[in-house]
Length: 92
Image (cartoon, rainbow, N blue to C red; front, top):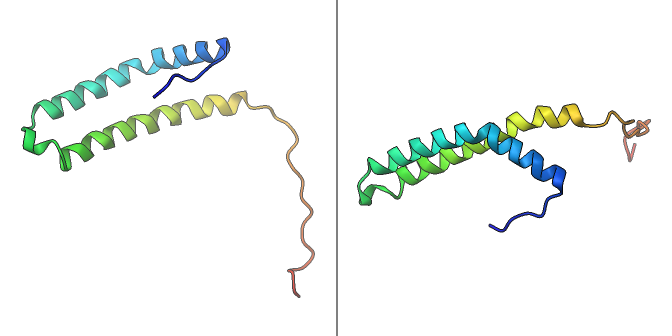
């Protein structure tokens, strides 16, 4: 995966997020390493593979869920789009 070009502000936010989640990343990586170390070569694909993928997906979901509330707070409170209500259904 190639690096994304970020502004200085975005780079600072990325560093802050990484620092904030680093402990969770490391703990999950440790659990995945233990999971893999406890399996024989013939057990790595299939169930173990799906377990590792599930752990990664769960970690990603937790990160996004933690960042969303912050982004909502920063969102501007602009005027919403207004749409006229229909008087009747089409074709009636």
